Image 1 (cartoon, rainbow, N blue to C red):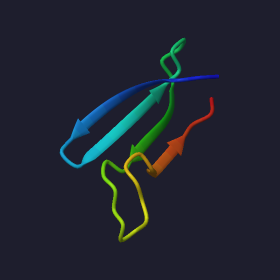
Image 2 (image 1 turned 90 degrees about the vertical axis):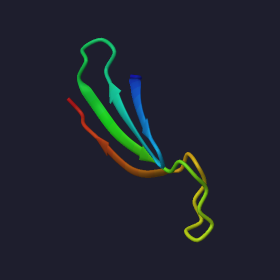
Image 3 (image 1 turned 180 degrees about the horizontal axis):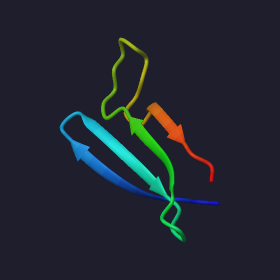
Image 4 (image 1 turned 30 degrees about the vertical axis):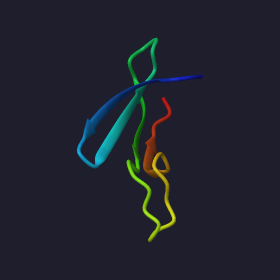
Length: 55
């Protein structure tokens, strides 16, 4: 199974909504870091938050 991601970028924040391309059902919601932050040991693209749904 794979999903189609729709991305919303605002300064310093990114949200990705992942949908099933056949049905339009929500599969997940992801919030990755947009910048490196050495204080926390994260790099741009690392996932900060992720929620998934199984239908």
